[in-house]
Image (cartoon, rainbow, N blue to C red; front, top):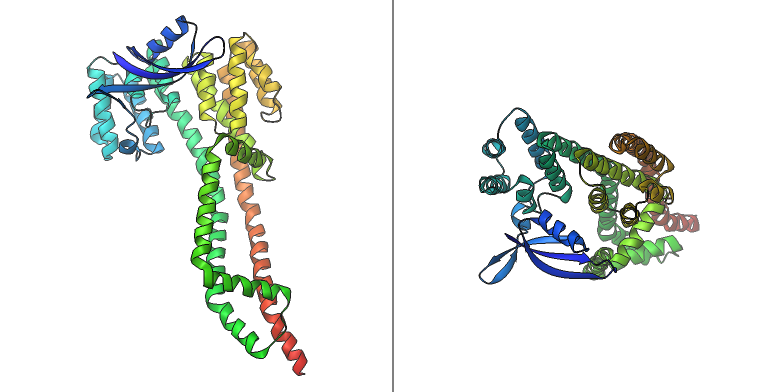
Length: 407
């Protein structure tokens, strides 16, 4: 018997929190459904020394990388398909692993399974390591007797998302490094080069144009108040970061992201691909439609896409078609997504249709990130050239004026 802290919604719409004992979280879901309430979130707790201690283990398993989880799911699926028992397969992976946090969590999973706990319940005790998507697909695989297939599907889904993220990060890395180098070079120029020219201009009493005065003023500020400037920037960054974690901040930043000239269309397609891939994986594994949509809403990062998925979940509960919600939100989800989903609902092959959608948009994002890398380079060259030109003209203009006056 485990102890759970949960947040639930009553049929009247009232949201409340509470704690309850159950054999596992699926039993808790069943009990809450029987009472007419809907579970929004649940966290297992362990009772010890009179206190409820959350089993988060975030610090201990924080070093487990996504690629290691992908390999775990894929290798485990292959060994189960070959006929190995689950406990033995986990033991083999544990002996092969060189990562201490991975070995630790695998040993705990083996101990739980040996005590008769289901694999999904064992995984759910490590929420910082295994996502709800991972746990739900494993649970569906255990229920249907196709755990190896579910694990390979989990590995494919995680690998696709991981690859997509790496491509986007790779496309953004080059301009980020260039801008960082530009800032460092500019600061060094303001500290070491500009003061020498400033002394020359002062000694010769040369009239200075506005651009030169701006550069000299920036140099004076950085050299005299550099620490305070850095402190102000750090405080502003911290304030912006904290604000971005609040609901209002998230909505504002995500809205700006979706409307940005180059990044906006890419963000639309990334969220569409992630929605299609996640839903396809869950539905193909046999996970309930409502639960699949709920988990997908947690996987998708943009709050506006989350809102659409939450509306879709409510529509499904009312007996409506999920595709209608996506059709009504074509500014976020493209028409192609809704049409393919509608075809899937008509033919009973939603998983297959969404998989095709995911592949289409993943390939499109891949191509766009490659094109973006090719476009960014000449833009950066123009920006760097403009900055260097502005600095050169600002510093040379007074000297040229002085030379002209002497002649």
